[in-house]
Image (cartoon, rainbow, N blue to C red; front, side):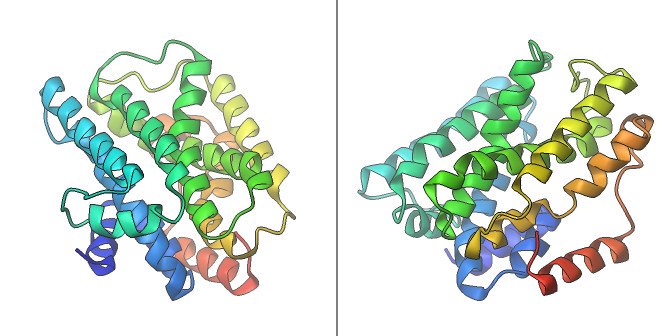
Amino acid sequence: MSIQACAELVQRADPDRFMAAMAAPVALRDILFPLYAFNAEVARAPWVTQEAMIAEMRLQWWRDALEEIEAGGEVRRHEVTTPLTEVLRREPALCAPLDDLILARRWDIYRDAFEDEGAFQIYLEHTAGTLMWASARLCGAQDNQEDQIRAVGQAHGLAQFFLAVPALESHGRIPMVDGRPEALQALASEGLAKLASARGTDFGRAISALRAAWRSKTILTQVTRNPLRVAEGTLGEAEAAKRGRLMVKTALGRW
C-alpha cells in the first residue's frame, strides 16, 4: 500500500505519465503517482471483461471508494486507495469531479458512438481535464487557474484519444463523431489553441502536473498536417526523441 506500488502500476499502464511524474520533485511524485494510479485503474476497468455488468461493478467499486474518502471515515484497502486517501483528504472537494471522471468512463464499456461532438468534448473534459485539474490543484494550482488547466487537460486528452483510435476501432468501437480529415484537423487545431491559451501563465509548482501534456503539441500538430496518420496509427515520435523533449522541458521549467 505504498507510493512505490502506485508508481509501478503507472509505469506499466501509463508510461508517458510515469515519465512526466518522474520529472517532478520527489514530494510532488507522492501526489501524482496515487492520482495517476487511480486513473489507470479506472481507465482499464471497462476493458478487463466483456461483461458490461461486471465492468459497471468495477467502476462502481471506485465510486464507492471515493465516497468513503470524501466522508472521512474508514476506506477499503487496496494498493491505490490507501495512498490516494492520504492525497485526497487534503482536498476532499476533488472527490466529486473525480467521480465524474469515473462516470465518463462508462462510455468505454459499450460500443455506442458519442451522441455528438458536445458529448465527446464532455468526455475529454471529465476524464483528462479533471485528472489534470485534480493533479495540478494538489500540486498548488490556484482556483482561478482551473479553466486554463482543464483546457490543457482536454487538449492532452484529445491527443491521447487520437493515439488510441486504431486500437478502439480494432475493438469494434466508433471513436470519432466525424472522422473526415478536415474534421480531425479542426479538432486538432482547437486543441492547439487550448494549449496556446495557457502558455506564459505562471503555474508555480503545478507545472509538474501540466507536464503530463508534454507530447500533446507534437501529436496535435501532426494531425493538422496529415490527419490520415490518426487511422494509420503513425502519430508520435521515436522513444529517444520523446524522452529528449521531456528532458529539455524539465530543464527549462516548461510543460
